[in-house]
Length: 285
Ligand SMILES: [Zn+2]
Ligand SMILES: [Zn+2]
Image: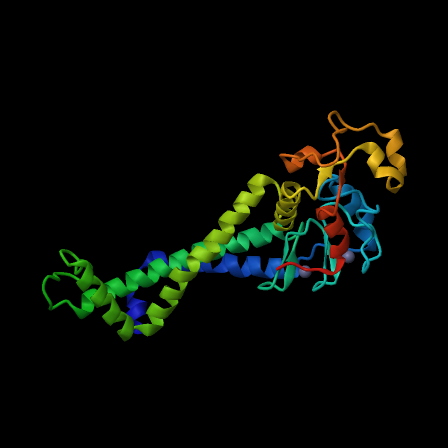
């Protein structure tokens, strides 16, 4: 499109390759880098993160049996993905867009992909707007008040301003359509990027945020509570030798205000721990 070509100044010829390259680079790295746990790296994965005994009970144990598919104890912060057919280290989520699990080894690339795509979309929308703006000026240069292609919008009502944009969109659909698509997609990419900035601040993965939310619900509904040592009985024979943490002797039915209070304590009921034990074959989106 010659009309678009002449609308680009030298800065755009520098910015375009600079902003176009990172998304492709991060996409390649996100797709090709895997965080799978296999027998060769399993023992190292078991030591990478400590079990918090809350959303990740020590494995193997009755609360966290070995992965049924991979046949080894699940390391803390890992999750089996039925699509990747493997346990994933520091599993965040299985991303359908990159057809790969986002985990310990490619999380940084995934973050780079989202941030660079957000910037590219914002730039694409702005560039399209600028090109159309100049094109309107050229089209209406003989219509007052329009002394130059760049100042046609001065003293124009919002209604007439929008009407001229609607006209030029019809004249230059191949410029307007990608710009509109970029502008409408930008909030999605930027929103997801911001959500991951929040997750990094909170020190958890998408998978873990779901587990904490489940635990909060179970505590609020009274399905998870801090049990007395004697209630645990024969299920946990080794507990006799480990005195409970301070305040760990509250009675059955005592509610916990904060899931983190559970750290180091023990619980009863079918909370996320029990769900975690069953989720070997599940995959999240
Ligand atoms: Zn597995
Ligand atoms: Zn996966």
